[in-house]
Amino acid sequence: MACALNEAQIRAYEEDGLVIARGLFDAAEVELLRGAMERDPSVRDHMLDRLDGEGRATRISLWNRAGDSVYGLAARCDRMVDTVTRLLGGEVYHYQSKLTAKEPRVGGAWEWHQDYGYWYHNGCLRPDLLSCMIALDRSDRTNGCLQIVRGSHKLGRIDHTPLTQGQNEVDPKRMTHILARYPVEYCELDPGDVLIFHSNAIHRSDANRSPNRRWTLLICYNRVDNDTVTKDDDRYYVPLERVDDGAIHRAGLKFADGSGQEHFASKPFVPKVTIDA
Image (cartoon, rainbow, N blue to C red; front, side, top):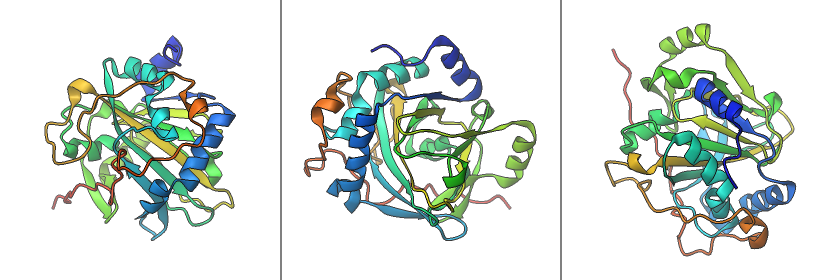
C-alpha cells in the first residue's frame, strides 16, 4: 500500500503539524489491538501511573521495539511505514510505542508540551520524528482528546519546565503568547482513526471526567539519518522489518512472547529541566 494520505492531507500536515487518517485500521484490527492492550501480560505488567498537577493519573505502558505481537505488526505494516516515510522524507525506524489509558472519571491531564522537548534529550539532533495515535476508543472533548496548537511545529523546540515528577511543560509564560496567536485543534477520533502529528507540535489533553474510557496506542517513528547520537537510552536505530497490511488479521490476538523482544520500559523518560531564575 502506498502512502495513506492524499496530497492535500500531506500539505495540511506540513502546514498545521497534524493530520488525521480516518479509518486507517478496520474494526477487526481495532478489536485485536484493543484486546492486546487489555490482556497482554507484558503490557499489563509494565503499566505505570503518570500524575498530572492535580494528582490524577494516566496509566501508560511503554516499549521501544516493534516485535511480532499484533501491536508490533501494526507499527511495521506497509500502510503505516509508507505514510510516515512520506511525511518524514526518508527511511524511518520504530522509535517508541505507548499505550495511554485514561480511565473513566479519574484519567489525568497532560499539559502543553512537545515530544521533541523530551526526545531532544535522548540525542536526536533534529525534530525529524512524528507520532501516530491510533484510537482504540472514541476520543472526544468529553473524555480528554488530544489538543494540538495548529502550526506550532514551526516554532522550533521551546524550553520546558518541570510540572510533576512525571511531566514537563512548555514554558507557561511563552505559552500564553503562543495561544494568543495560534488556534487549538481538538482532535476527535473514532476507533481506527489515526492522528499523525509532528514532534514539535505543542499538544495537551484534559483529564477524563466522563464515564467513558479513552485508550489510545501511540507509535512513534524517527528518520534513520536522525539516529540518536547517544546510546544510553533504548531508542536508537534498529532496522524496521516491514510486513504487509494483512499481517494483523493473520496474526490474530497475538501477544508478546515474553522474551523481552519489545524492550518494555520500567519507568518513563522525563528529562531533568530547570526553571530560569
